[in-house]
Figure 1 (cartoon, rainbow over the protein chains, first blue to last red):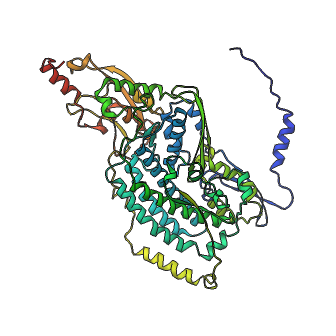
Figure 2: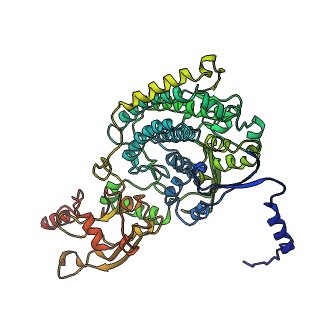
Figure 3: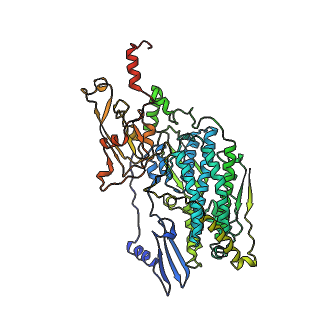
Length: 415
Length: 183
């Protein structure tokens, strides 16, 4: 192939440098404040450059990219299954949901249908991940607003959930649970019973949290009417998930574009009325209850059968017992590990309703075991892009409430 | 079927605005929790219960006859997402194990860099000999970078023996004794 060269003009360098340096310059009596990149309020490595007039913020510029690891490029250099551990580290508060979204994207390119039991396990994983993420979201938000107790209660419940994840996947945090065409292992003995016990235990704790926060005047004073995101702004900035629904937009991918058989389950989609910080708290609290409802329905109708699409021999690795005893399966194991699952050429964009919003994967395959391109759409990135418009006009103390209510994760924003 | 639920909110009542009902019910909640049993562990003294199939430190295991299970096929080295495993294939000592020496290989060197390992368990999952096994050790520490690289001796010391469900060599021996009649 012939290579062509092209001269790129970068303009007048000294003029550009002068313009860039004067951009952050302060004019008048305003004060500059820098928050982060490592600060308890920012829940990760987010840096905020703000300009204050007295106590009122006049300008806010979020600086992101401190957690950039180049996941999209890494994906191009490894087989489909090898990338699953990297998806854990996107939204690291709900790794199971990321695993499921990624595996489903690749399966869509391959046109692979997973068995019923696998679907049920995946829905269960997604909903438990949602509960875990929202428990943290609500708890930390309470802490940001000055209610430390709430955080202790929700964290205790989240710990129980992590024990369940540990039993299921072998790790508390970095679950790496799904594989292309199935899941890594079946659910352990008696695990569903323990999930049910957890569901019974989490609802009274939620009641306690709501008793402490929902009608608490201090909490209301700090959150009501603060950080109002109008319906139009939310849509314009591409907000998704609870943040979008709090602004009154009735949109949930589980309801509007059902995947994994979500249309079989009964649940309510909570929608806010004004889109302020308090609405985002209300929506998250209710979503935990609805997730518990879904989990209970799954447990009632848990199907039997295989957990992997075993008939797809070029995509799914064979069972371990067969690898150890049969030559054909041994070769299949070697082929899938070294060459990767054979995915046909094609491209797919798939979004799943993750706890933080719609996590999307755009996958281009040119055939073979390695993706040609993988683009990740992180919902937290959209939530943070709004800060520049949302924050000015608020007081310095409102920053903690606004950031806490947006419930973002930098791992997913910077990826 | 999913339905939409609008989160209505009522304005605070006069009593709620005075903080008093909130303080009363809040204190009731917190004092109620104070009397409960603690949920925390006194960590270094008390250890959490680790479930089966936990993904801890990867180690090498031997079979009950003390043979090395690893045949240095290097599949784990290939699959390892962060490239933490490094294997140098070697041969089996013919004097010590004449049966096996010219049939299989064994690793001459086998290093797992615990500074790179992400405990994903892929090595155990793909191993066709069940030679690599993730233990229930979850906290490792060291004073230097070299110390954090587990070499072959250390991996076997940590791994020990894993009872073999598969019994490849016993089956072979039994077949030889039968004179391979069945085949």
